Length: 375
Image 1 (tube, rainbow, N blue to C red):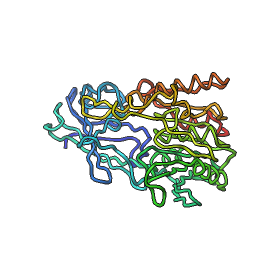
Image 2 (cartoon, rainbow, N blue to C red):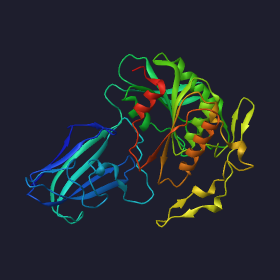
Image 3 (cartoon, rainbow, N blue to C red):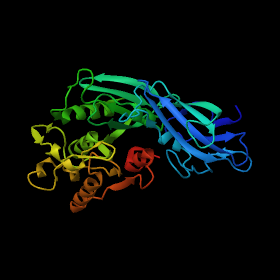
Image 4 (cartoon, rainbow, N blue to C red):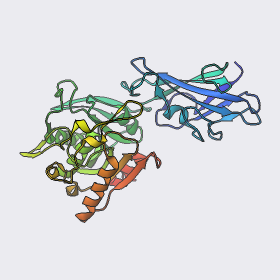
């Protein structure tokens, strides 16, 4: 092979850790294609590629060289990793076992044809989800089914509860990475896992209250409160937790609705009905995917008011992360409703970040600003 592919820092890195990819030993101005690929735990293949040109010394440094096309274009040092797409449509890249890394194969080929060029160099880069010293502890406490990730050290640590959406099960990859930044994070399952309900027919907030109590009573927790991180259905559950439960602060929501969705929410004799919808209003995108944005009824219209979550009762701040390409929720509209509702009740408006129009926020900074860190 005529070229050397390097990744810095060398060795295994965490999935959320930026790396510097470079190719040395090329001819001056040589056109090449870089390919990245990995297989998930089920064997599904994910790939990305981009076309480049070496500089006058034969060096290709992705921090300085813009991609000329392919899976992305422009100066994107980490593009080969964030642009990975499934070989078979409709598959999602998910880390199911955070105790093992993903092995990413990086290749450089001569010319600008991703499949036909001569292979010039290759490297394998491992990206892990458990940082050095991070401890993974399965939790089966009372009704709570979860995994607790603890940072290295003796603590005590600020705590976060992490909720995912209607896929169910127990998703650990986000919690494991956050623990590497100094937080104790509880990845909490709430259906379709072990002895939890198989379907999301009714949701009882007492279950999530029990998870909060577990965190605050844990000897490694700092207290007196925990932060919340929720995605999709997990987002509106976090809104409900912040609105009705004590000891909650710094709630972060990713593509979430301001109304209770999917199933009725029960808490101490109170019932919040789920926001009604009309599945017949779904659309089909040019690529043949279903778009569900328009199936949800307007929570500001009667008779949908009862499904609205009274987030003005919450004590801590909110951050709404709005995915502009999301096709499940009208995330931008819901974030605006939340902002107007909070301000109407004399509360501070939430921070709203639009993605990918702006940079994805550093959640460690967000929880620190919300009072979870003393520093």
